[in-house]
Image (tube, rainbow, N blue to C red; front, top):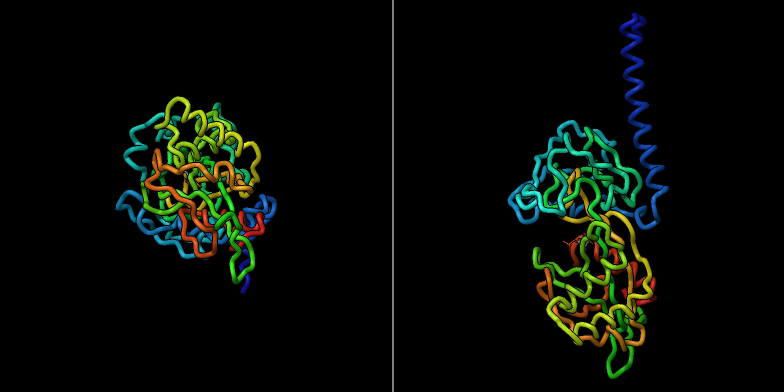
Length: 320
Ligand code: RP5
């Protein structure tokens, strides 16, 4: 029997209001997602960002089922542990202060030299703490990431055609030419990856792309004089023209509920195979190894890098 008392009517209003807010939350997030770049639209729920054991530690994430990843889906038992790696807690120059209460950080803005704007649109703040735009990760804090909110990186995808005796090789099944890209083995996880890196404070992305490629794949830091000049000229010439492949959130295992990776991935293609394609690769900086790797759906790479290579193959009309 309906309760028409003042309390009853009030309860019913609050209850309906909650339902209304819940539906609105999902609807608004849906609209927000629809207005983000196409590259971010077709993403599945992040999975590497929910890896059980946090990288470089023994910290365990709370398990988050696929359907509970979006913040707008209720998950009353959600109470993830908090973890910030000791190296970040020490407060190196690239890290934010740990205590957000006293810090004056301008989230969703360019904050001095630090870019705190997300490619996914404005992210939510809860108690002045950024909320991962891709949803729950099973861990609070910053983990290994220095910045609260987005941590910006750049990924140079350097490609050439696979050739034998000067002829471009065609894959027998797809009848499409085979693309190769410069891959590095990450020293931290041992996984193969694009030689990307973090955008330094105030640095232009175009410079990060060149710098990271030079340091990790050609070991430019260890070269001096004329040698280094030649390498830098070759890189500069290839990197004058690139095709943007992806811009947005990265499903990185270091992500947390409050800190995550975003990147701009750009393809630099040596079509004739006469420039960077011929340079001797040499692993440097935080790369354990480097090599030209065939591009195909068999690739198993770090974070979202397989996805970036799939898009590159599509753009170049190459075998996948
Ligand atoms: C990934 O982490 C990005 O796509 C980029 O490749 C990389 C940047 O981090 P570091 O290599 O500098 O650790 O999310």
